Length: 370
Ligand SMILES: *Cc1c(COP(=O)(O)O)cnc(C)c1O
Image (cartoon, rainbow, N blue to C red; front, side, top):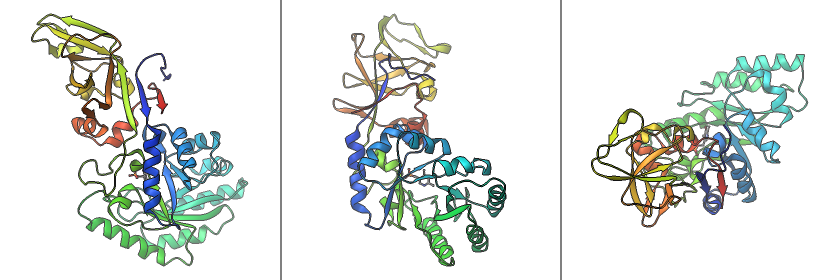
């Protein structure tokens, strides 16, 4: 999808907010802890390369991404710091992983055996740095038992690899009840103690663990809180202030008075109950502004205006309190006057989490950095 720069719809990223959130976290971790900024999924919709450049400038020690391609995007933008891919990769991609000096997770001995066979046939130039994933209760990726971990450790002595890290991921770090989190933590540290040596990076700490638990391990994988978003949505209050960085704005492109009884939008799901001022805004579900947001609101001249009728692919309509000029600024996420719409407000309205709302914003919406 082409980035549409001749349309007034845009996402604005407040770079000072990102910097502030990074300085806050830097003060909370110890000197021996490496800070890895998580910029997967286009930096949670904020723009991976731009956020990575800011984080690099703020002195982070590395980055986490979800896929090899996301890692390559950073390398091609000139990022030389360590990059850890968080998702599992196919053995056939290892020459590329080696070429771009990406670190990857491993989760099974079968995969390691296949990779060793592949290396014997067709060796890659630099050993691939691997982080052993332990599944301590997330049920997603990783070794389940110490016995499996030991088999993996033996295979990691092969010249194909460099054993660089070991990690797990918590399923409930953002919940008030800490019992499952504690179980996972204990399981992890008990498992790694049985290894003959520890790799350079031992890591379990995501945003929620840092905010509500303890900064465990010697590397932190800091994602959502860097963008100023509360990892628990609104279930728990953050222990320190987070500054949201993303706002979304547009302009009114048409303003008209529709007589009482007029239909608005596909399916005729809304009908004016009086003569109403209706404004049209150039954003729709193809921009990630999903159809479920029908009935939600935007901010215009500091006032909430309801979205009426169905959200279309590229446009939506709102009810205005009075006539307004074409070109009037519309705030879909952000502050206008006394009022504010947050990503969390949108997420609550459609029954999801702000992580999902932020990374749904499509490539069509330009990101500008201020
Ligand atoms: C996404 C992710 C993170 C970052 O989580 P936040 O809640 O955004 O801090 C850390 N570790 C892994 C394995 C992840 O997938």
